[in-house]
Amino acid sequence: MRVFIEGEEKEYEAGTRLYEIAKEYQPGYPHDIILASVNGKLTELHKKVKKDGRIRFITTAEKPGMQTYQRSATLILLKAFYEEVGAKRIEKVSVDFSVGKGFFVDARGDFALTQELLDRVKARMREYVRRELPIMKRSMNTQDAVELFEKHGMHDKARLFSYRRVSRVNVYNLDGFEDYFYGYMAQNTGQIRYFDLVLYEHGFMLMLPTLADPESVPEFVPSRKLFEVLKESSRWGEKMEIVDVGALNEQISRGNSGDLILIQEALQEKRIGQIAEQIASQPDKKIVMIAGPSSSGKTTFSHRLSIQLRALGLKPHPIAVDDYFVNRADSPRDAQGNYNFEALESLDVKQFNEDMTRLLAGETVEMPRYNFILGEREYKGDFMKLGKDDILVIEGIHCLNDRLSYSLPKESKFKIYISALTQLNIDEHNRIPTTDGRLIRRMVRDARTRGISARETIRRWPSVRRGEEENIFPYQEEADVMFNSALVYELAVLKQYAEPLLFQIPPDSEEYIEAKRLLKFLDYFLGLDSEKIPHNSIAREFIGGSCFPV
Image (cartoon, rainbow, N blue to C red; front, side):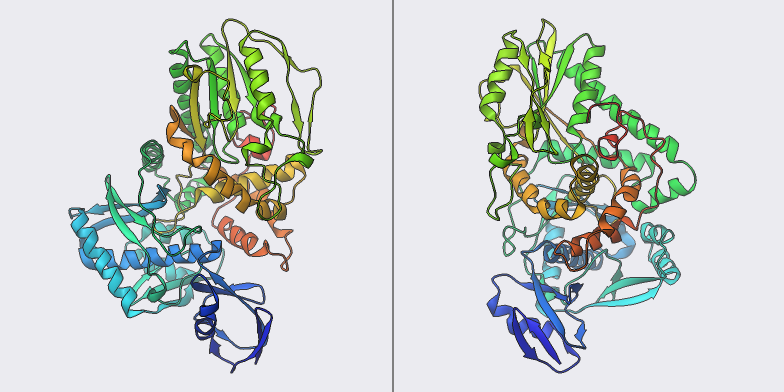
């Protein structure tokens, strides 16, 4: 059997496991090999190579590899926790959300959650790693899987698979502990060497390596404001009894989607109104700065906030910092040679400060509009002048960074951080990364408003993420308030817009693996018609039909 690895032709016996081949090549890789791509298809290392083909090894320094590491570490944690505490004493152990470069785990039951307990769990995990226990996968009938999960008290998984079209399900087994995971797993526990458990609030943090440094565990640095917003969203999900995809599908199938949409939108409108009242109670605040990562819904939020401010007697003027992009030909580039639209240097900061300073001084200023199709800033007689009760509402990814607004008085700024902090998980052990929701939002919007294909959006996404890590997240805790723009129903709506775009990505492209993963992810959701979504909804910024100029 002939295979090509890193441009080299090699001979192996048919049936040789990828794990054995990976061990041979590991010394030539700076990071741990955890997956393989065989003829363009992601494959776990326990698989056998049965015919000629091309193999590319995936390490933990790549997104699919790190996701595999995270899933495998979660399985190891769950087995250790259940064995240390005892299944009968545990009510739930759910991986809820990401915060402070770690994953918050909510553990409840008839036990005292202490650091001493976590240290015992961690010791068990290290013992599993030392023993290099294989992570086995078996395929079973979907209905049998539903019955298995019900038997184990995993009602969230049973409900999830009640709405699956596929006839079979892959279930993972670690030394007798069985669970379902969305995505690939490591070959054995020995590949998961780096982790830590830290007691925090009413649960604990599972700390794992990052893509930037796959061989070390970052120190947990609490993000208090972000955590409170995430906790509040989780509480709302529990009250509505929609904490996972299965529960959402249940509401859609019962015909309750209309009420669900209205309740979610009312909740957001109430929160926006509270923020407006907070701003209005401080007459010295003349500049509202709204920042957040890509596809957070900043533009719609700024318009809805402006309406609430007007209801309180103020005269707001929404301004999009994106209109101050330099012409695309003059944009900076990243290390890969791609345009870096997330860099502060992609904006005409000098012109922005000059215009804002003149507005605050009562002068009339012609405002620019950026043409994203042409990649050029345009002026078309759009003039603005501020009066006595006027207030600037400025939105852009850099708005919490004072380097953007260096000439504006700090005491006049009211800072808001907004992000789509997904409160919905696939099930208790399979979380939905916030970045996935934002990527799908951006993909749909890019295709609709900017003529950019899903393939191009996926290709640019790593650069977007690097820009967020550098330019946005370090400043989020400086915000006066935080706003969660995620809508519990939105992925069921976005599904119908995103799937046709993802199906257009060819199998021989580098972006195909990510496209296939997203298609599989979206398949968990029942589709939801967008007709009942209000025209001022943040969802409209992405799917179209907004009453705002977005």
